[in-house]
Length: 242
Image (cartoon, rainbow, N blue to C red; front, side, top):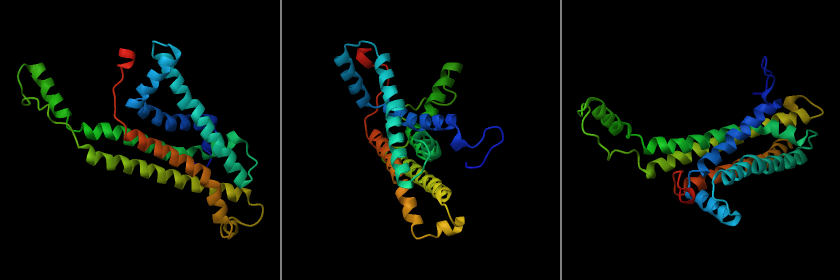
């Protein structure tokens, strides 16, 4: 993802690529958060304090916080620390764009864990649904009596799978961050060949120090996803007694 591509340029220099990456990753957290019980407690607390009786302004505020304010604080904070540690002269937004690709693995892991939960816990529901559809369409149970008791894998099995997806995403983000930081340190090296810079005794330490703020950011996303996974799930449409 570092080379120039015909017609699109280098992804780490594109504003749209960085923006979509941020939305993809923090949207994964928001999407999962919107389906758990604590979000309803938050919505009701906001409704009581503001006197609102409709849901959309409250949802708009939550979306703004999780898709705009929170990413801005975390990303620009990480970029500021990273710039200071690496002594980079790039702008804050330039640093964010540079490290934006590192968000993709953890973002993908969160999406995969979330929808993997729905898929695996409802793995066998296609059987009774198909049986019932055939019964309604043809007037007789051609595929057998609908077995509504069929569900999917138990949560005791699905939960470790979700943790596996998230852990792989976290590891992938750290690997991408390491690669980006290595490239940054090489770019900032003023003397010597690439091999000489990488073989320097201070090179691994400087790389590790520079990637720490981004590694912490990735871990915060990982921890948030794990917390969400451990919350009871709710369905939308019951807000404010609707």
